[in-house]
Amino acid sequence: MRVFAAVLLSMSVAAMPLLARNAGETGKEETPAAASSASALPEKPHPEAVAAREKTTAVKPEASAIESEMQALRSLVEEQRAELEAQRAALKEQQLKMEALEEKLRVTPPSEPVAAVVPAAASVVTPAGPSAATAAISASSALNPAPAAEPAPQGGSDEVSPLQLKIGSAYVIPVGFMDFTGVYRSKDNGSGIGTNFGNIPFRTTNAFQGNLSEFRESMQNSRIGFRIDALVHDAHVIGYWESDFLGNNPGNVSVTSNSNTLRSRLYWVDVKKDKWEFLGGQTWSLITPGRTGISPLPGDLFYSQNIDVNYQAGLAWGRIPEFRFVLHPTTTAAFAVALDSPEQYIGGSGGAGTITLPNGLTGILGANAGASGVQFNSGSSVLTTPNLSPDVIVKFAVDPSSRAHVEVGGIERQFKDYAVIGGAGSKSIKTGGGGFVNLNVELLKGFRLISNNFWGDGVGRYIFGLAPDVIVRADGSISPIRSGGGVEGFEFTHGKTLLYGYYGGVYITRNFSVDTTVPSQPNIGYGYNGSANSQNRSIQEITAGFNQTLWKDAKYGALNFMGQYSYLVRNPWAIGTGPEDAHLNMVFLDLRYTLPGSAPTLGK
Image 1 (cartoon, helix red, strand yellow):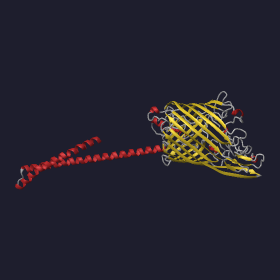
Image 2 (image 1 turned 180 degrees about the vertical axis):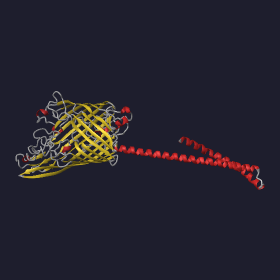
Image 3 (image 1 turned 60 degrees about the vertical axis):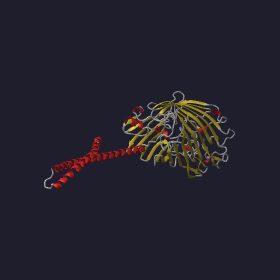
Image 4 (image 1 turned 45 degrees about the horizontal axis):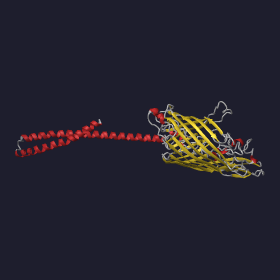
């Protein structure tokens, strides 16, 4: 219709000059003659004048008809133009709606290159077809810390993973991998495939542990879980569950059946609408360094590429029950506040040494179990510690481009206990806290520089428990221990190969006082002269590793081969007559098959 109107209008416009010229010529030739004849013979018009007038009269209706047709065509063109403008406006409105939907669904472009991946589509839920199921899962949605080195195929139904399910309006993706790990240590660390960084044995004082090496193989790091995406009242809802097989094992687990125990890792729900986001459940703590934005998805976080399931010494992290509130004021910035489940801690986890408690308060601070059994956690599995309030964590993150991520933040913690001295009871409450600065920048194509740094008073719990949070003085009062940790390093991706190297370290300051009730051993706390050699001053680890993708397919998963070498050094505050430090060499090898739809197969 539009084409017909345009052609008709063009023909009409072209005909107008010709018609006008004919009309003009007729007027010039006939009208003067008629006027002359009329003046000469006013009583009887000349026949030619009569014919001219008749011809002029005939031309006027014809011109009027053309003008009317032109006006109609102009009106038609104007209507078509208005219709086109309306359609453009409608298309613009639809485009704005789609952009708003993408913002609601938090479409975050991958920023960290790695080699070993399973391609996946962007994190968007749409209501149409199999490709929407693919779109429900992003590279950042899965189990590991970095997105793909190679772009993920997009678009066709051939790309859809056979493991993706649609239930009602929700999309369900199984996530996980099958992992086979082998580890060799030059000394017996007594820790399975996860390293107890705080308990590296001395060759001279730890008997057989310091003189025997160890080797083991395990599938315990294999993962199983799923992710659910749905749109609910214009909000993007994600449910996430992840488990491995590193739980508390039966006594004969390594003899015959090797029946490893399933344990929970992550279990949370996240709701995002417009610029606001809320999360509740067990998640990677907000204190864990990020790779991009502020996100609970494992692929958006940094916890190293290490095969070691305890990651890198010096890394601040935790998987902790948490409430989190996030504001995304722009697409490149985010601000978050989190309330983490607290636990006042005095050492004993990750191989770390515990503080020395006042003798006069043993059995009073903790009924029938000493202070460490009830009022404080000493690395045990009890859930009876009377914590005062949640740990409060804040973080601000900015991603000026896909090549840079910077974040700063802090933590505030509260500690309390109750002591009875001389028949009178007293309560002690103390505040601790610290801060962190993290950086992840791509300096050259495929080469990223990483720097994560954390320091504070009473924050040892968040450095893999390698430092106690506090000491308890003889009067029952609490004093936080100052400690910190950091991981500096690089990651380089080329094709299907990832190379990485890190230096990580933990430093724990002294904090002790005098116990006047025991003259033979007056010092209590942490790091005093004569303290146990488990009370460490520093722990350092140097790591180098690779991850090679052997095979991958968007629909059927990926197969990777990985290797890691680490050198560990532990320095206690008191060495006695022994050596000044303990050393440990470790080699890890790993073969892993990753399910389709899961994230890259790197990290833990």
